[in-house]
Amino acid sequence: MAKRETQQPWDDEYDVVVAGSGAGAMTGALTAAAGGLRTVVLEKTALLGGTSAYSGAAVWLPGTQVQRRAGIGDSAESARAYLVALLGEAEADRREAFLATAPEVAEFLERDPAVEFEWRAFPDYFPAPGRLDGGRSFVPLDLPAERLGDLAALVRPPVDRDRAGLGHAEGPLSAGRALIGRLLLALTNTGNGTVRTGTALTRLVVEDGRVTGVEAATAGGAVRLRAARGVLLAAGGFEGNAAMRAEHGVPGTAEWSMAPAGANTGDPIRAAAAIGAATGLMDEAWWCPGVALPDGRAAFTLGFHGGLMVDGSGRRFANESLPYDRMGREMTAAPGRVPAHLIFDSRFRGRLPAISLPGRPADEHLDAGTWVRAESLPELAELIGVPAEALAGTVERFNGFAATGVDEDFHRGEDPYDLFFAGRSGDRPNPCLVPVDTPPYYAARVVLSDLGTKGGLRTDPDGRVLDGAGRPIPGLYAAGNTSASFSGRRYPGPGVPIGSAMVFAYRAAQDMAR
Ligand code: FAD
Image (cartoon, rainbow, N blue to C red; front, side, top):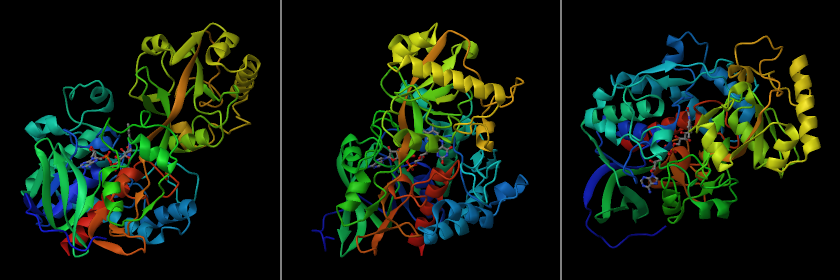
């Protein structure tokens, strides 16, 4: 690490500089500001919230007052059993810090009248001890736009509107927008928080072995900002950076990733690596199947409640109802699975039997060729380039499973998660197995998307960034997808990305305040 830089004047001085404005960044900033520290949030784009604003804002914080209010029998103990079953002891220190702090984070946030949560059913993603079938995650209540006033225009709109260049729709902010809006409101109310959009962290300033500030690019030129207590890097992963993805062997592409265009390109990870920070899990992401969109991008797709998915050989390769990260991993597990195709029939009236964010109408897909339609399965097979006999055999076998209710190949419909999204009507023996037998048939191209990379800076339980020897770099912290996730190569349940970002950003801010 550089010893001491030539002294140059600071443009502005703060106690805490936070790079990024997702849920982790905003929680860290709020914690610091509420503790009396002068805090600035630097956001590279013109809008706050990043991928967090696009999100459903499920927050996986086990054993908090929110689950208690809802009468959910959740606890740190059951969450520990679940995490240990999935992750082993590899990240025991950070796991314990996460479990010990989760209830405190919910309590701290809800102490502010701007922040209110409620438990929302959404099953954990793995059958393992300690799993809660109804899940343990919670979401923010919708936020009336009037409560934010002019600040509402700063919050990134939902993904469908944002990608179309549209602002917020009429009505309250919901899901990720409500979370970012509520944290922004609370931060503003502290009187100690400043937000600077259009300000991208480019470099860390080091003096006598300590990070004492940052350099950032703005439309008006570079600025140097002092951070007397510390810098928190919570600026997403590098999912939007094609070169970094290639360098680290991250499957998928920057175009198929879900982060706002141009936002998460890993600048803070590179800035920290340049001063000796260690990285980990750099080939990892929070995966999902992505329905290919007419504009060349992809849509986060989950909750398949009809159809079946085939690879390039025309065969199924997984339980289509798997939690999205597990399905994404199945897509990378063997060649020939990207693109895959979701085969479905006209019983869904031209709609995809899944939740797709953003969704586009069938005619747009059919015009662009991202979906094809045919009166017969052999015709459909030809249109998507898979062997016709194989596809016919796959569909016939699947329809047999639909008749008996038992998926002998991939056990679809046997897990509470599968059933969570299944259609509720009908008298089928297994609601997840819907026959594909009503022409015309459809095939939707499915690629590998992600909700962000999850490899990045190595951190300790207080979010302190570690150097190559495992020592904390004084004054430097990281959280969210800028850091290597404590959940390793698993996505345990809904809300782990945001929940863990919030906990470690909270702990980082507390450490800075000590
Ligand atoms: P982000 O929220 O993406 O924030 C990063 C911010 O940093 C961006 O605004 C970016 O512009 C800014 N930035 C980047 N570089 C710089 C720089 N150099 N200087 C300053 N600022 C910079 N996860 C959950 O836990 N629960 C859910 O319910 C959930 N639902 C989802 C639904 C959808 C549709 C999608 C797409 C994702 C969902 N996810 C969910 C995943 C989750 O949203 C992300 O993994 C998480 O929000 C990432 O948080 P982050 O703070 O690391 O990054």
